[in-house]
Image 1 (cartoon, rainbow, N blue to C red):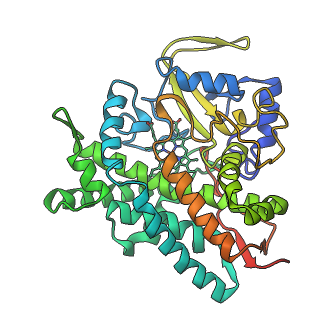
Image 2 (cartoon, protein in one colour):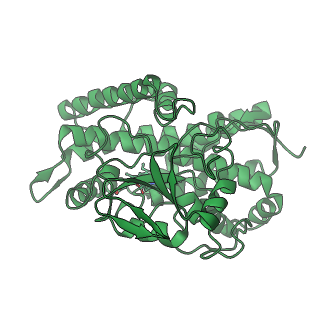
Image 3 (spheres, protein in one colour):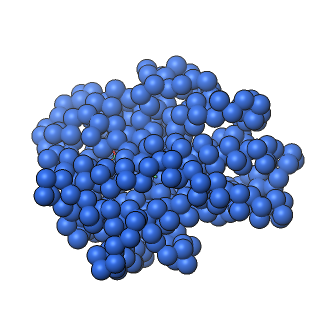
Length: 389
Ligand code: HEM
């Protein structure tokens, strides 16, 4: 049995037990099932994020890459192409100031909370975190709200993996194609009728005469939609689960909301939604007595690095006052998450609003179902009820 099998059914709910085995006994581990090396210690993962010349992203950064992404997105290019894409994306992204997110985020939060409070029982992912993240993202990007649930389902499918097939099936690939086609039509529409939204800003972004190509705009837009739907909504859900599982932490936050921001950082360390990303080696690397060869795939296990005692003392203790400097919940180096500021702000605003209205809540089922993914860790559903058990 592999000490860490990416495609075992248990790994989505609990990757942490396997990570500990890797860190202590196999810090540079060849995974037969993944066909890739896995790095699990903080120092190794962190160093790899800084060394993009050796750990290249051009072969794709998703463990099971989707067609058309490699070489066309921020996460799947190296400098100098990556620097160019990043600068143009930043130019578009920064035109939507973070302050502009506050009002719509609170508006969606309040509307969702009214519905939740009227019913008493709710499903956190569907009724709260997805409402806010997808709603906000669709507004920022100027996408039609009517397609909201449809697109959310396609994104979840596109980033899912099939355990038995050890990778993507045609169904996953078709979901991604559907998403790309949908966005391509939206981009074409913005070309004809520019508006004040992120897609238009991406299409118009220009630095010293340089602009994004059509394919780059579509794939960058797809990255934003996938990150917003998958990474952010999953993280908000996992954060709500942490505050459920650690009620003392939740009650301290409700009494003093200045603890909310450090609690978010601790949850990003403790169980980030973006658990693992991939790189491809551009040269041979010797590490911990193993030789990884040029061309080999390497999985950087951010979720494991964040639980390494060599960096974070008592790493399995959830401590909202830890203030974990340098955690890898948003990755590191050149590919550090472009949406980190947005993710922090939206999580803080919406969680605060939620706790102000619902300071006590409980899960109505302990049998949680997790989405099946080789990169992300996300609950498929969090059935809950307002109040104490
Ligand atoms: C809590 C929520 C989020 C988490 C945990 C997260 C995590 C990450 C991580 C770990 C990476 C590095 C990928 C790699 O190493 O290859 C990344 C990259 C990225 N993220 Fe996020 N992300 C979140 C939310 C968002 C949001 C809301 C957006 C934008 C709407 C976003 C956009 C991006 C982009 C564009 C990249 C690629 C950056 C580059 O390669 O230069 N993320 N994210």
